[in-house]
Image 1: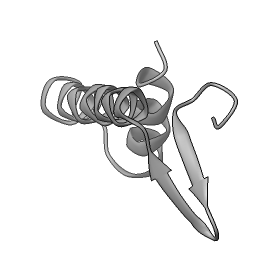
Image 2: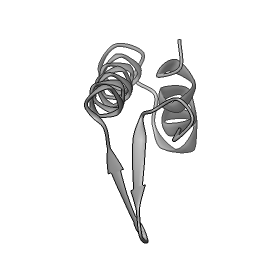
Image 3: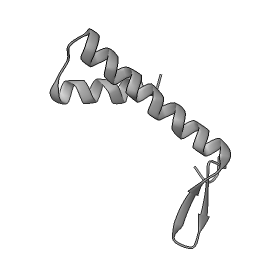
Image 4: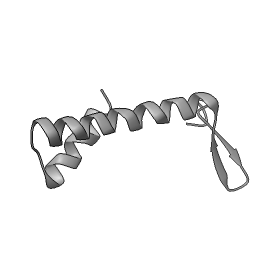
Length: 59
C-alpha cells in the first residue's frame, strides 16, 4: 500500500494518504452494501453471510 501511495509510514505509525482514505471508504461502503443485500434480501446469516460480504466488497 505504501508503494501505491495509499499509506505513509511514520516511525511505527501507519497513516492513510488522501487517496488511501478514499479507497478505504469505498471498500467499507461496498462491504456494508453487501451486508445489507445478503442479510435483508437474501436472508443469509452467520459465517456464510460474512464470507459473502467480504467477497462482494472486492468487485
